[in-house]
Image 1 (cartoon, helix red, strand yellow):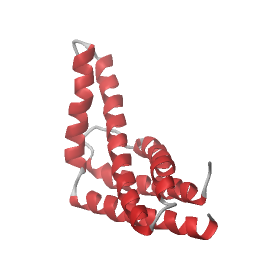
Image 2: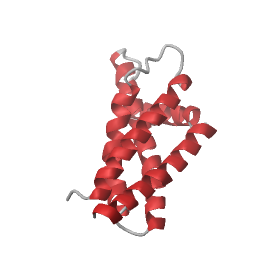
Image 3: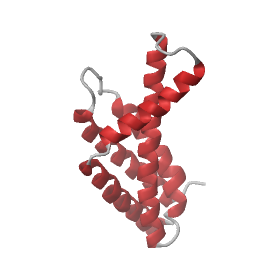
Amino acid sequence: MPTASRLVGALTFTVLAFIISTMILPLLPEGTSGESLWLLNCPVGLVCGWKIMGPRGESTRLIAFAGGVTTSIAAFLVAVFLHAGIRMVNLSMRKIYHGVTEAIGAVFEISMNWASVFLTTDIVTTLIAGGIFCGWLSWKAQRYWG
C-alpha cells in the first residue's frame, strides 16, 4: 500500500543513488563506459527505498535512521552485484569461462573487486550520511502526511 514514507523513501534513495553513481564515475577502470551507470543504480535506489525504507519510516525516528543506513548499503550492494552480473555476461559472450559454475563464481569475484575499489571514504560517508538524511525525510513525511 502506498504511504508517504514509501514515496519519499523511493524518491530520496533514487537521488542518493544518482549522487553515488556520479561519485563512482572517476573510480571506474580505464576503458569502462560509465554513461549508463545511473540507469541501473537509480531504479535500484527506487526499489530499495520503497521496499526497505518505506516500512521503517513509519516507526520511530531511530528505526528510520537505521533503516536509512540499511537501505543505502543494501542498494549499493545490489547495484554492485547487478553490474558484476552484467560484466560476467559480457565476458561470457567472449567465451572467457569454461562452465556455468566458473561464471557464477566470477560474479562474486567481480563484485568483491568492485566493492573494494568503490568503497572509498567519501562514498562510505555519503552512503551513511545520505542514508540517515533520507531516513529522516521518510520519517518526517510519514509524520506530516501519513
